[in-house]
Image (cartoon, rainbow, N blue to C red; front, side, top):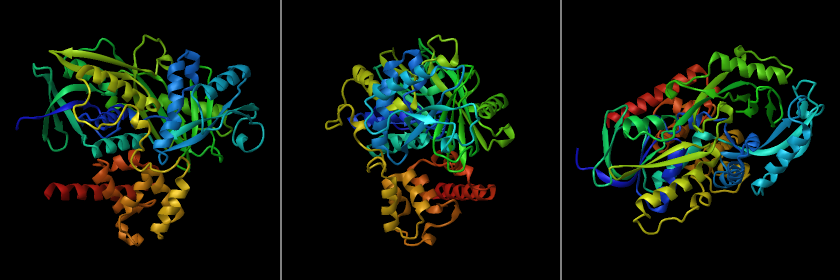
Length: 512
C-alpha cells in the first residue's frame, strides 16, 4: 500500500452525528474522510420514532436548554429539507389519574413559546368525545390538547447529509470497518479500514479522529484507539411496531402511561400506524438488537388500553428496534436518562480524539456545530480558504430541498409537467423522497417503459440504479426498509425480484 494521504478529520461512524459533522466540516474547508461499518444510518439512525420534536416530557426533567434547541431546530430542518420533513399535529389526551389538565396546558404553553415557533400552529383544545378525532378511541377519553411537531424520514436525513458532504469533497466509505487507529508520534493518527465485502484496505493519516460510533463509541475508544473514555454510553433499547391503520384521521396521539412512559401512535405509510417506543437498558451487541416478544406485547397492550379495537402481537405487520447511545449520567431509570449530547476530547501521544456521547436526531445539526468548535480548538481553523461560516448548514438546503416548506404538491405538479406519464401518486412519492432531484432519478425518460424493470409501487430499475449510484445502496434492504419503506408494500415475489436485480448489478460492476 502506498503512503497514505493526510486529511484533517477521520470520522468513524456514518449515523446522523457522523454524517452531520462531515457535512459541516467539509463545508467549512476541512478535508474529511468517513467510514461506516454498515449502511449509512443503518443502526440507531434508522430506528427512531421518525420525529423532529422538542421532547415535551423533557420539560419535567428541567432540560430547558435541550428542549429549546430542539424546538428551534424543527422549523430549521423543515426549511432545509422540506421533501423529507413535514409538520404533524399531535393530540395529548387528558387521562384520569394522570397529569392534571392545568399541568398539561402549562407544559404546552411553554412548549409553544420556548423555541421561537414561526410556521407551526400552536396548541388548541381537542374534543375527543365526538367528531373525527374520537375515531377508535375508548369512551373514557373526553378531551385533550393538540400541538405541533414534525416528522422526518430519518435514514434519508442521514443519507442527504452524506451526499452533500461527498459533493463538497468528503470521502464517504460504507460497509467499511475501521480496523486500526494508532498515533504516528507527530500528533497525527494512522487509520486503516477494510471493505467488508471486498476486503480492500483503505489507509489514511488524520490530524484528528472523530469517534461517532453511537452505541459502539465505548468500544471504539477502548478497544480500537486504546484510550478508554472517562464517560460512557448508556445503551437504551427502543422498539417500535407497525400495525394496520388504527384510525382514519392524520393526527398522532401521545399517550401517558402509569409506568411513566409515553407512547406515540402515528399514521404511517398510508395504510399503517406506527407505535412506539419502549425504553430499557440493553447490554448485548447493538448489531443484533431486535424487538423482543415482551416489548411487542407491551406496545400491543398499551394500544388496546386506549383504543376500542384490541390489538395482539399477531396483528403486528413489522417491528424494528434500535439502541440509543445515551450519555450515562447515573440516572437509575432508562426513560429519565438525558438525551443531551456530551463531548470528550483526549490526546494520545499528541494526537487528538473527539468522542461523542448521546444526542438526538432533532439536534444533530447543532451537535455538529458544537463539535466543529471542539475541532477548531484542537487543530485550528481550516487551511483551505473560502469555507462556509458557522451556522451555514441551517441556511443551505440539503440535496433536493431547494423549495419552500409545504411545497411538495407544487413540486409534484412541476414533475408531472416534465414527465406527463407519471401519476399524481407516483410524482408525490418521488418528491417526498428526492425533492428537486427527482428529475435526476428519472433522467431523459419520455415514457414509463423507459424506466426499466418495475418492482411494484412505482419502484423501477431507473430509481434503483440512482440509489446505487448516488446513495450508497448495496443491498435490497437498504431500499426496502431504509431509503424507502417499500418493504411494507411489496410482495415477497416483488422483493425477491429486487434482490435479484441488485445482485446482478453488483456482479456486473465487479466484473467491469
